[in-house]
Image 1 (cartoon, one colour):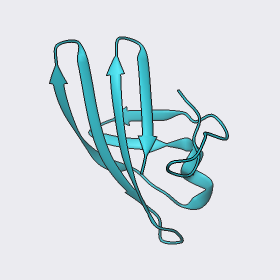
Image 2 (image 1 turned 90 degrees about the vertical axis):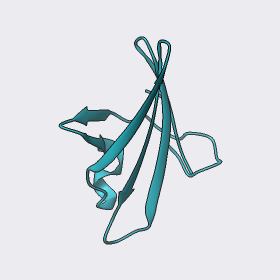
Image 3 (image 1 turned 60 degrees about the vertical axis):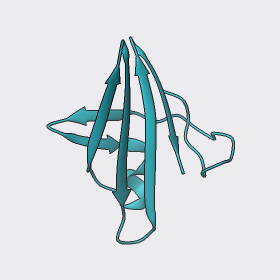
Length: 78
């Protein structure tokens, strides 16, 4: 997956995300206390888009958006 960084800024690392049992999870956000979040999807042809919002008791919320095409994923957070 593409790296992660502050919204609107260049990515500064790599992340591993999972979609399991209806939940989205970003390993790169674990050190900051962010947990799993319910995600929604929309499918159009061979493209799946998703949205999720993770939160942390220590930090703010992160709104995630992404597109999946085949084995490629593009994720951004705002």
